[in-house]
Amino acid sequence: MPSVGKCNKSVMKYFSTKLALVIIITLAAALRFWHLSTNPPSLFIDEVSNGYNAYSILKTARDEYGTFMPLTFRAFGDYNPALSVYTLVPSIALFGLDNFAVRFPSAFLGTISVLTIYFLVKKLIEKTEIESKNKELIPLLSSFFLATSPWAIQFSRYDHEANFMLAFILIALTFFLYSAKKIKNLIFSSIFFGLAFNTYHGAKVLVPAIVILLIILFYKQLLSFKKLLIIPIIIFFISGLPIILGFKNSLIRGESVGILNSANPLDTFVKNYISHYSPNFLFTTGDTIGRHSVSGMGELYVFQIPLLIIGVIAMFRTKWKNKGLLIGLFAVSAIPPALATPAPHALRGILFAPLWATLTAIGVASFLKLKLSKLIKISTLVALTLVGIYNFATYLHLYYSHYPKLRARDWSDGYEEMVKYVDSIKDNYSEIALTDYYGQPYIFVLFYSKYDPKTYQTQGLAKYEFFGGSWQKTKPGEALLITPPWQSHPNSVLKNIYAINGDLTFTVSETDK
Image (cartoon, rainbow, N blue to C red; front, side):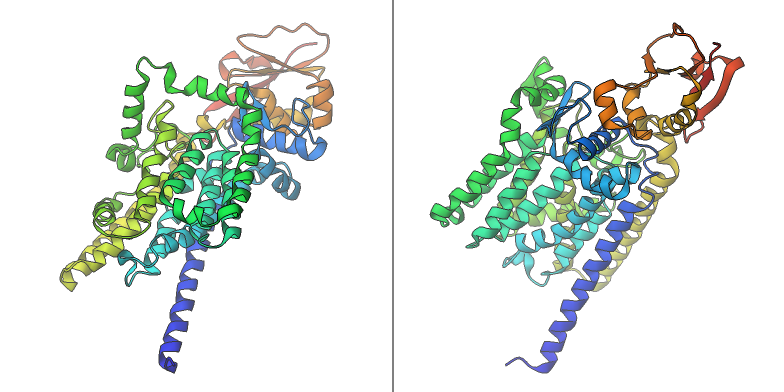
């Protein structure tokens, strides 16, 4: 029988591990929920569209166009998978139609991903040489590095279906690795792969690629279920029906951004694929699209560079059962973003975020096993920790102090204040003319005025008229005119609307009767 001392030591280790995990999850939640409704500074157009359509489903069971419980949501000529919109419905029912409600599910699932990666990595390295003396260290560090990852934080703080896809894929992989001789876990895995399949355009490529990878690597385990294997197969097939039934519509997005539009698709694919492993993309500039990263930083921290180098060496040199899965996931993660432009693309390659976090954790554990003097190890770890703290502090400073001002235009800042002001005085005017210079203003009016979906489906937006280059009054009565600043009428300005960076965005004027 084990001694009392060993039992106490085991119990203490168990609780210390769980405490560390709780602290990491708390940190992850804080980084994802802190000032969520105000940073990024505003909802951008896709968030507003998803939010209003979820509100419309909640109130009428129909989308903004009057379609009953659609399998895909028509959004400005694009047709998006439906699950991410339906996921917003309970959030809006609970919190109301506002910025926080729209972003809550993504922040919540981003936090869940941090918890999930702990269990996923724990099983990934189980009973292997790489696990030796690092049974809890590598999973905990994987969670920590994902919790603090600029890549993961960026997409957890606004509503985008790619972040939903990531959470469901991680959960599906975790259930799969725990499914040996447990058909229940395999069924749950197929359910979450099915959910991921219905979240994001990129999932139509990524999810089948991962499933094929799992079949190749674990075919013996899968065949051991015999006839029971038909259950997860049927579940996964059913999950694909919304995509199959709406296949024509689902191709629209791919046709607009796909590499088949390029002169040499194969050459473009290879260049795009390689670009996602570029040090410049990973550690210096990041994604150049304003909503995808903060200016002045890469997708990863600089302090990770030596740890990732050690991690890569350890990954290829160390023998362990599930190494092929980790390498395979790195290989397939770049396929969806490589099939589209522009590249590299952090959003389409979002699965890289937990993979680089895991490899960084493996790098730390592998470094601790190196036969170096204690002084060298401690000095190196202290240096990396200090650089890491500096990198992290710099990221937070850039994200909270500079990013909202630098990227205000990318987030359609100014619409919320303008719509709420106009909504407060609209009854005094016979018509409201609103510029479409910034693109699709009607959806912002619907969202921020909480316009009744049933009324919109049957009557449209009463009083509102949207115009391009110029507008001419044709109806009697006083009208309200909302223009970009260079089209304003100085003598009749009621209010100027400024973005968070001080830029004049809208001018609200009134016309003569």
